[in-house]
Amino acid sequence: MTGESTATAVVKPSRRGFLRASVGGVLLASAALPLLDACTPGAPAASGSSASATGTAGGAQPNTSAAGPLPTFVPFAQPGLKPDFRFDDPRYDDGYDNYPQQRLKAVAEAPGTGGTIDVLITNYIQPPMPYEQNSTWQYINKQLNAQIRMNIVASPDYRAKFATVMAGDDLPDIMHIYYGYSLAPNLPAFLKAKCEDLTPYLAGDAIKDYPYLAALPTYAWKNSTAAIDGQLFLVPIQRHLPTFPGNGGYFFAQTEAWNKEIGPGYVPKDGDDFKRVLLALTHPQEGQWGFGYSPGGGAANTVGPFGVAVFAAQLFGGPNIWRLDTGGKLLRDWETDEYKAATGYVRDLMAAGVFPPDVTTIAQSRPQHADGKYAVAIDGYGNSMADLWRRGQPERHFFMLPFFAAESGIHSNALLSKGYISLNALKKAQPERIKELLRVMNYLASPFGSEEDLLLSYGIKDQDYSLDGRGNPVPNQEGLARSAFVPWQYIARRPHVNYQADLPGFAKASYDAQQVIMPIGVEDPTNGYYAPTQFSKGLTADIAINDGLIDIILNRRPFSDYDSLLADWRSAAGDQVRKEYLQAMSA
Image (cartoon, rainbow, N blue to C red; front, side, top):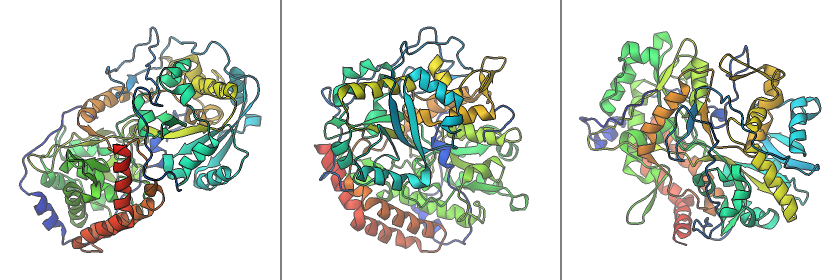
């Protein structure tokens, strides 16, 4: 991965030129959805294996004032622990080439009181070894002095299961909420009626009783809408701000193909030059295509059809889902000239043949990219990049393309994530019970390099993992099933760090990427605000416009249909969603 700064080069065609060039084209196809687990922490490679509602009226918002419900941010500084790569800004992730050898005992006393704690949670990675046969899980429970029992539900079934739980009165102690408020349209009402208001326990300096939860950066609490209408109900699982597939991503090139055919260090001069490069990298007879990405028509995937949102941001300076201009006007990305120009540009690439012909049927782009089918594809920072690197080795390597613009005078943007992946709510209980649950979550969020983090991530030494010559834990296959696959990290988790000991250079490459991404990173201005219509009618409306844009890019519909698709989205939900967000922002 490169650390070069953004390149904004002079180009010939205008945005209108890109649109005109895209109107005529032939139907070709290809690409793929990012792996679902791209947003999840990557399980370490095993030894000898490859890791391969209704809600409230109007919009509800978090109160971010000093007297509001958000916790004080108190970064944890571990004595004697020095990251190999660090930037003094909580928006940047620390990086480690090797696991720290100086082990901190993070929690002096067991946090539990000996009782049972029931957890409802989804299965992000693979099913773990069942509790009854899982000696590591049993050992961790002893360290917690609590019987943690998890109802681990398969991801496709979790939404229905959560709805059933919401409708009843026999709630588990901790309830996991993935994909935020899209999990259930009436989630705010449920939180207020049946879940604990954590404001007295965690707001402001109160969180200092739980120092490892206090180390979660403020953006994770705010952007996840952990607080609504002045009350804090949710604890986020933080993720890095450089984005991952499903929320954005960046262009990643296959190093060997790029260096051989384009030249080491070459940065496309503009949009036309990028098209030329992709055509040069397209060799159908050899099974290699210049670019690969999925249709991406689902509402949960904000990258848009064939990665249009990334093209819009990086080549045309487009927004991150929404844009709030200086006059207070709120625009969805589809409503901007930049996104429309990017749609025309991707349509032109499709007609030119740089996508493979199976573009409409491939569900995941990363395996094909790692296997050499695509010379360039969209992927994410962090664990997503680690998975791509690991899948490609030893034949192929990958680097993030430096940013460049479609035209002279355009400044590229880098899309940023919301800084979280999921949340957890606690059912209403007596204060001492809530404090116990928070102490357990504080333990689970123990800092990187601590004895507790090592145990939760890798299990028991010599049973679940061994140490390599540099002191890095190397798990075995059964160890993964006993430790890493048990979803401790989705109940509570320390801040993300870049550490992949089996991938030399990964921490440095991630550090370099942050230096490029963060200075030009753009956030979604609606982060931290709640618009109920988005989770009732909005998701369906989003799918409809995405599906229509897919047809435009594939030349199944004329480009002139773009405006009518946009009008349909506005009338179906878009204008009401906009109104609710603006109400929330002005409250």
